[in-house]
Image 1 (cartoon, rainbow, N blue to C red):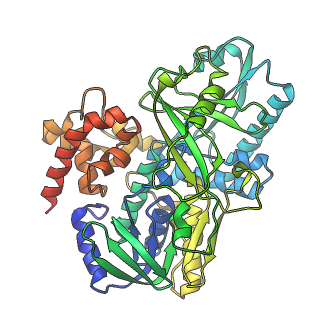
Image 2: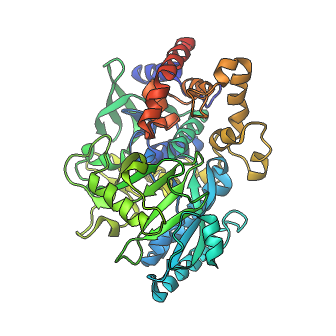
Image 3: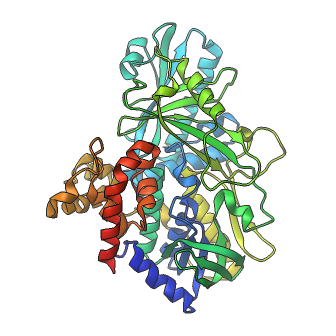
Length: 513
């Protein structure tokens, strides 16, 4: 077993050690991007860590993002230079050092129509130029994220043939970062932490938190276990208030649609369509490597109990299709929608107003029982959030460790882009697994059955399922369909794959015992 492998056998061994009284420096509750980032930051400093997650890695908000690594342009427009700069710095770290294999530059097209006022066009271009200044200040080279520019009508239509040419005056073209898959980033963080000794335990639910202990239940056996730690950190995101009564969050729903391949003819370029009546809000169409297009995003406050899996309301579907269609020759309809998903952002409660106006800043809060809770923030800045949380834990607990090193620590599979281009494996696998791609490809070479697709119409192979169970902590078929392959984004595809995935999961789990 390699040090970065997560699987049922390792989980059983490490959970038994904690149940037997082994004490760790930090106990982290929550297996999303922030919790996994905290586990890695702490383990990289030489601290002993146990992370527990009630369901699966990236089960919550972290798998429902827009799959973008934002540079902070929106915050710059609101005058929050510090947050914008932080976002640009963290984007650069992800794209150039820690996860080049999981990120890519994506062109962003802002079509300019006759209905677009000259003032609005100037406002957008000013923001893009300012955003490029942030890129330079963050040290991200133009070879990774090219500079913004104006382009003529012909070039705009060549990049996005589906745009309606009627009234088109040209477009603005800029670049931002995008993830291959947000859930895969979380899994990579957790595996990298595990390679440095962190205990990563899914299906372990926290029942009660204290400064130095977590009472938890193994959801596979029903057994309760008390995990002893020098400091406990609550990183459960939008559910943080369920474990820390002093935390007040105002969740915001971000809905996305998954369009069938070919429904929106935009090639490899994302298209940003302005929301009527808004100066700095857009509905974007984000092309995916498999040919599909994600359409998002809403930003609506939600009240009441926080659901484990949010759903997209019909009003959001109508809104996204209506706004996106204003820029296309063929209007988008519900027949084009192959799937949908929604995530809840854990925004810190403000003084009223729209959730779109609440800050994406993060905060580390100390509860009356001594538990640290990290709230707010966003996916792009997870690393800085983790660093701040561990710094606060060191200060409160008296533990000794050096400063964070994660800004220079590549995740498993990471390598400079030049090296990634030479990895001897299919490009599709390299984009998901980086330098580990040849190991997945080799499974299919040793056993040709594993090299076959799960079903007709997908490129995802049986080998990827076996890898997910042996090395990525998948414990059942839902872990594979929902978070390791993302087949569940389109329900018919998930059902087509389910029998074969179930067979592979059962066989792989049996092989671990």
